Length: 207
Image (cartoon, rainbow, N blue to C red; front, side):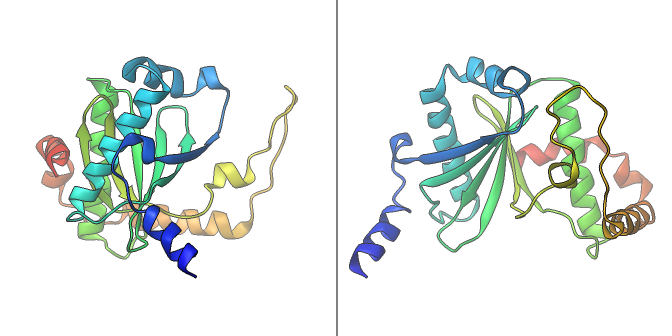
């Protein structure tokens, strides 16, 4: 019992990048993923861990200094690396880390966060992950609540091992849920002025 409590205490004793213990999943070929561009920005794998340490400290500060676990799960996607950051009170956030791309890509990230916040404000009955803030260091990063599970693409897309055309059956419940979500989304009474206010999106980086 003592050994278990000792390991538990150590798992929230994050004092330097070397304390981080990470594991990850690569969802596509290395050269098609976000990893090469991100490593080029930060300078290498060691530097990526240093950047992650900074981002984890930022996450902790946004939750009034709540300690984060040393153990981090990474998912390497096409445009971002997603880190699962868990706190000592068992709350977990997703930290999406991107190469900073001033222009249309960054605006798309801001507008996406703005849309989610407006939906939560005006239609809180629609289930959607909560944005927790964005920032810029060596990488651009955004926090939101972590949701366990798989996306529909991950769960139902065929794992192609050849160039042949493949078909996938999607359960009726998925179609029904998607239709309900789209209906609720398109009927959400967001005021036109707020939905067109680009300054609202810009302010997200200072949350």
